Image (cartoon, rainbow, N blue to C red; front, side):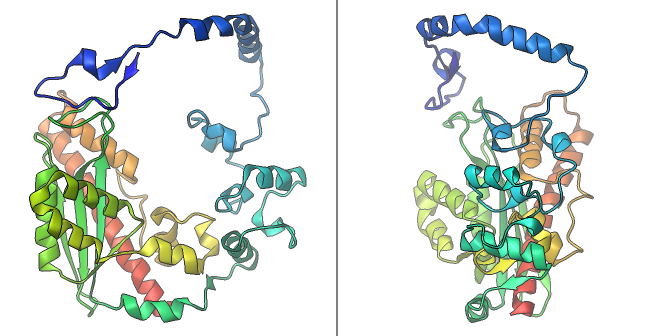
Length: 341
């Protein structure tokens, strides 16, 4: 029995329609002969006095993430070859077979793609790489500018009418505006959660976009995808929402294509890039420090009947601080790019 992701909720949940049932008896029967050996292996492992010596690799994330990943990789260097962007499993295995663990020890003649080579070279030299094309590109990113970040959640059991299991539901945005003088203005929205937030999310976003009409910096195409979802959902808002797409600039793509920094440690997530370029930007002081935590917090606000008003207010405050930090981080990354051009 598993969730039917095509199910659309009505006023009440139809539990028979939410779940699908499938007879897998024949598939299970074929596996039965292997069960005794698997059980014996499990018993042997449980009786062992030492943890198994398993090499950390991509298989730690299949079929699900291993909860011991941080523990098993604690001794790896910050520039571990695992963090070379999009490194193929075969290349990773080959380097490890030569006892290469750090990017600094990757052989000069080892075949890498251009972006991978830039990351490895930056780790070796401890110098920042800037592509020659960056200086030509940045004048198109001149101030004034806006910085936008969304938060969404995707509940398995749909909470709102006319939503599906795992459907992306935006519930929060943060907006920073730089008028070109270094003065920042911030606007934000966070849904209460008792009703479907998508309409209010879209309308308040359009009001902010009218107030601040300049280019919009985002980190990846995620915000653009959410805006397209809202344009499809609300035909009367579609024209204005689609117009926002032409203002959005993917700052992540620019950094990925033109910058390699030793302190990124191979990652181009905002949590790696912003603190490296602007050390005053940190996430360690926040109770909510990533998108997964934000989704879980909002779900709790919406669905936890035991949550008292004080705890609810604390979660809302933490959500506002986190999303605001992300758009502030975008401003600092943009400023760094402009200063370094």
